[in-house]
Amino acid sequence: MEFLVTGGAGFVGSHLIEALLSENHSVVCLDDFSTGKKKNLETIRDKLELVEGDIRDPTIVREVVMNVDVVFHLAAQISVSRSVREPLLDASVNIEGTINLLEAIRNSPVKRFIYMSTGGAIYGEPKVIPALENTLENPISPYGLSKLVGERYLQWYHKNYGLSYSIIRPANIFGPRQDPLGEAGVISIFLGRIKNNQPLDIFGDGTDTRDYVYVKDIAEVCIKAMKSTHNDIFNAGTGKQTNVLELIRIIENVTKHETRKNFCAPRSGDVHHISLDSKNAYDKLGWKPRTDITTGISNTWEWFVTNH
Ligand SMILES: NC(=O)c1ccc[n+]([C@@H]2O[C@H](COP(=O)([O-])OP(=O)(O)OC[C@H]3O[C@@H](n4cnc5c(N)ncnc54)[C@H](O)[C@@H]3O)[C@@H](O)[C@H]2O)c1
Image (cartoon, rainbow, N blue to C red; front, side, top):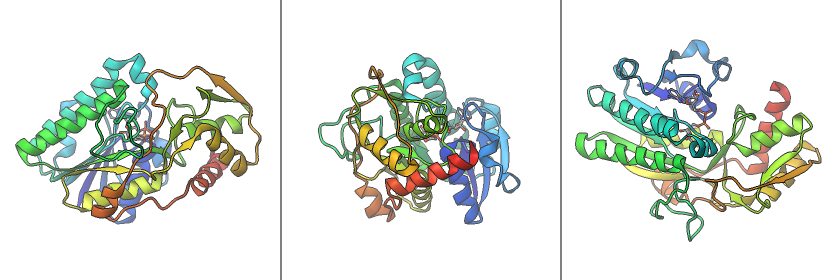
């Protein structure tokens, strides 16, 4: 089988490619390196085909999908804050880019499409937490909106052209290689600041909660979804809520550093509370997260200490 991973030079994409290669699959990675890095692929560079290009470019995308059986679509504008500042850019990459890919696939051998959506931003502020897949999608950021629109286009291509698909709605993903200088990925941002002896910025009073899921568990759910035949949506999270102050306590224990905290105004577009019920992924894919938050943070810190 031949796989295309869009956004494969990014944080999650590079872990997914590693997992696919460990099962001896052939992988093509399409990435424009806007946030992705060649360094993320340095240990596996000679085992994959790397195409530098934009998912919005019809010519490149048509060429790339021509010999591919399955597409994992991860390339995206991923920052909630940036989507608030630059909604047009967000829509261009996340909506136009997704449609461009789906259009190219119509005349290609691609049989299955795995779409990386968001479970953290798509439900907005749900009344019941953990949210299920049938919880009303009610995004409060352009990022959540653009991901939802991408899902709906994919389902339209399924209904009209028979493209088989799974949609993954991950919670907040963390782990080695997440960019500490980005605007998303609070665990990496905090670890990066601790490493540089800087205070931690907390948006709001520190009681906002997130569901933190380890990156290798997300690579696993993507592969399980690819191997299944379900045309379905799968939340991928732990079901647990951890607030920012609790998260900092875990980080302080792991890193053995005491932190300085800098409380800032809440950011527009950020939800207050979210966690995901992933029973559907357990029932249909046999997936549940295997890495607890402390182990995941220890692995990430170890990576920071060696690589920064
Ligand atoms: N990190 C999280 O907590 C999280 C949570 C839920 C969903 N997701 C989704 O997972 C996917 C991967 O996110 P990530 O955290 O690895 O972010 P990332 O920024 O590390 O990866 C995104 C990749 O897409 C590439 N890219 C961006 N625009 C592109 C374009 N126009 N053409 C080609 N490539 C382009 C970037 O260069 C990068 O390599 C995204 O779809 C994101 O929305 C992430």
